Length: 270
Image 1 (cartoon, one colour):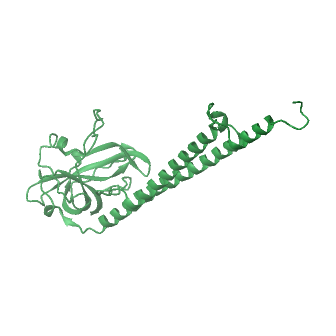
Image 2: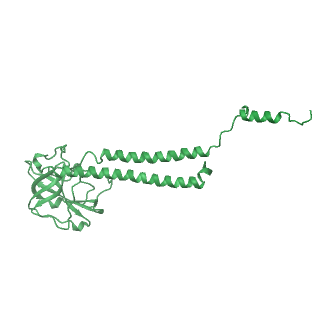
Image 3: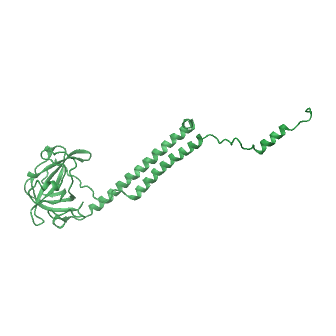
């Protein structure tokens, strides 16, 4: 079969097969990308239209994270506690590595004084992280559930591997919300211009559009089918022609020819 595949005609067919398979694969991957982007846009649009709710109406200190809370815009008022500020390393913004600047907001909007971690922004150098004044501030932000520290490494001084409220509750001797907020607005503006706002992530159940995923699977199936057909045709071309059995009777034409050749001709000696 290899000898057949090395013939010029089959080599040309193999090159055509490679072009077809690569094209179908790229079309499938393109459909997957369209699926993810479309679903993300729909989720982002749905999240952007959610009305802002008061933090006290959504959750309270030490309460489980609300089932509908991820991505919900909330408002709260209080004072930043700069003495408890920390950085979260290994975060990206527009492909650039850096740190989240997390400062707890001390607020009593739920009836008791508690701390709410607030992601005030992003810096590429820890020295850029400013310390906000201890003054009254009104914030609007996007609610997010607590993270889990999966780094497995001890953090540097003034840093935490994640915004893990289960860990922070052992460090802060005050009631704590089981959530954190991506800052969107603050009044008055107390955060330095060196601290870049972090766009709130899009939360949702699914990040794909099933219809486009189906289209992608079709292109992948087409690619596999092309490979199968090439192999099938190559295998058929490589097989030798079938030989008749050794004990088979000759065809009628052969018998007639044999009989004619064995018959006596005029002039032959008797």
